Length: 582
Picture 1 (tube, helix red, strand yellow):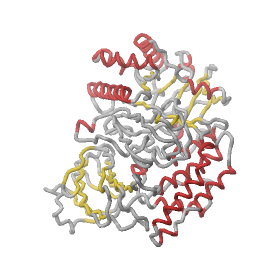
Picture 2 (spheres, rainbow, N blue to C red; picture 1 turned 60 degrees about the vertical axis):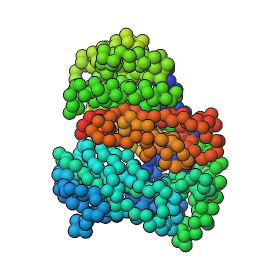
Picture 3 (cartoon, rainbow, N blue to C red; picture 1 turned 180 degrees about the vertical axis):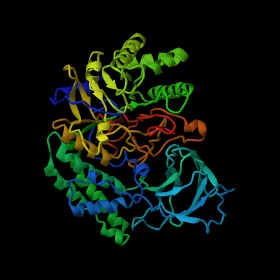
Picture 4 (cartoon, rainbow, N blue to C red; picture 1 turned 180 degrees about the horizontal axis):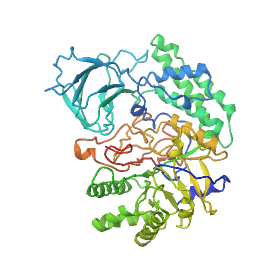
C-alpha cells in the first residue's frame, strides 16, 4: 500500500506546522525496506567517488568519540587513497598529448582546485605504486583512478593510460589503474578535457586503494574505521539509546595498533584490526534498531535546455531501464511521478506501457505526485495547480487504476501556503520535500510534521536530508540518521535520497569493500561517447547470497543476511542541471 511506512510514522508524531513553507526540490525514495543497521564494512562506501585523499570525514560524522580515538581513525583514513600530487598542465590542444614519450617537463605544474580555460586542455602525470602507504603494505591491492573536473555543466574528458585510451565521456566512473598493485609499477596518465562553455575547474584526483580480500585474513582498515564511526553515531540515537556501549567502540579503536605502521609491521597491524572487529561484533544486534530505507526514482525535467523530443526519448530510456532492472532483480521497486511521461509511453510505446501496468499491479512501480508534470508550486495560481492534480490523478486512475497518495514535486523553488489543502482534496495524505534543509540561516527544526493550510487541511510531511547525495557511505548515513532521530524523537526509520547517476549496472562480485551490494564505484559498463553521455535513469538491485557474520553490508540485507534486498538511485535532469546524469 502506498505510503504504508509514512502512515506508521504518522501515529508517532503530533507536530503541526502551520506557517507558510517555502520549500524547494526533492527527489525522495519511499520508505520500504527495513533492514539491519549500519555497523558494517565499507561495502556500501563509495568514498572514492566523493572524498579526495586530502579531504577527510566531515566533523558532523565524527561525534561521541574521544580525541585519541579520532586520531587513530584519521590514521586509518589516510590508508585508503594515494596522494593526489601535482600535474603537468597544457592549455590548448596538441597532437598526441597522450603519448608516453611526450616531453612535458616544460608544462606548468598545477594542483587540485585550480582553474583552466574554456579551450581544450591536457593534464599529465606519472603515477607510481609506492612501497607502502604511510607504512601500510598495499601490494596486491586494486587502485582506482578518477579525475574530477567540471565546467558548470558537462565536462567531456578523455583518459589515457600509457597512451591507450581507457575512457571517454562525462562524469566518468572510477577506472582501475593497477590490479594487482606492485610497488614500483608506473603508469603515465594523460587526461584531455574538451572545449567547454565556461572556464574549467580541476577539482582533484582520486586514487582509491582497495585492499585485496580474496583468500586473505587481512581486514580492510577503512572497514574498521567505518564501523566505529557508524556505531558511535547510532548508539546514542537509537529508540532505546545505548550511550553506555560507546565504551565498546572506544575499546575497539584502542585495540588498533597504529604504531605498527611506523615500523611497517604489517602482521601486527592486521592482527590488531582483527581484534578490533571481534570487539565490535556484539554491537550488531543492538544496531538493528536503526532502519534506513532506499528506493529507486528518476527525476526527469520535462523541459530543461533540450527539445521535447529529447525528453520523450529520455523517458523511454529511463523507463526501459527500470523495467529491465525489475526483470533482473525481483525485489527492485521504482517510483515515478508526472502523468505526462506515462501518456507519452502509452501513446508511442504501448508494449512498454503494458509492462508498466503489470508492475503497477505488482506494487513494484509506484506512481506518486499525482500531477500532470512537476510544475513550479510557488508562482502558478490555485486553479492551475488544481488542474495539474485533477488531470494527473484522472489519468493515473484511468490508465493504471491508481490514485496517488504521496505529494511529490522535486524541482520547484517554492511551495504555496495552500498546498496541503490542494493535495488533501486531491486524494493525497503525504508530502515529501527537503530543500529547506539547505537553509543556512533558518533551519526548520523538524523532519516529520503535519503541514496545515489556513483552512485546516493537513498532510504528513517528511524531509529526507537531501535529494542529491552522491555517496552511500555509512558514516554519512549514520550521521543523517542521528540528526533525524534528534529532530523526530522516538522514530527508528529514516528515508534517504541518493543521487547515483544513470542506468548503471554495478558489479557486486566480491568481498567486503568497494564492489559490494551498494557500491557505486564499480559498474560493468562505462560511458563511451555522446550517446552514453545522455543516458538517464535508475539503477540496480543486486541479489547474492552471503553467509551470516561474513562482514557484508548490513543495510540492504534481510533474513539473517540471506540476500541483498534493495539499493538506491535517483537520477536525471538535463544539460547543465545540478541533478543531471550527463
